Length: 175
Image (tube, rainbow, N blue to C red; front, side, top):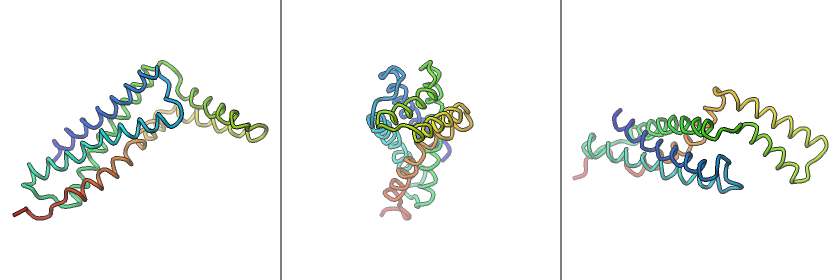
């Protein structure tokens, strides 16, 4: 089971991380505007995490003799998702290095500019600026940034694991 978990987790992580790197390179180190970046990211995660389904099916058909119960299938899916998430975090950290820019400051400035473009001013704008500065300081800490990045992909992996375990469970051998 461990070999399957690592193999398919690495495949999923490389696909998701590769998509992240490709997007960063295509948009010259800046996140795509609007919801485009979120849509691209979510779509790439779903494609990458299809390895969860394939990994569970492979384990069921090869190692399990055609049998797998829900909980072992779900656990395998979570393990694959966790490995994929760790590779995704490493890819994001690589993106931060390759982009050669201060992403925390860029994002904080985007928060402030977004508020200004909506007409926010006065005390509310000062509050947004304070929140942006707090985010910037927090995001510079890798012990905060890395779990935040992991949480981008892992919930998608949990959902894919749940659906895959339900679809692939076979508590008894087929006759």
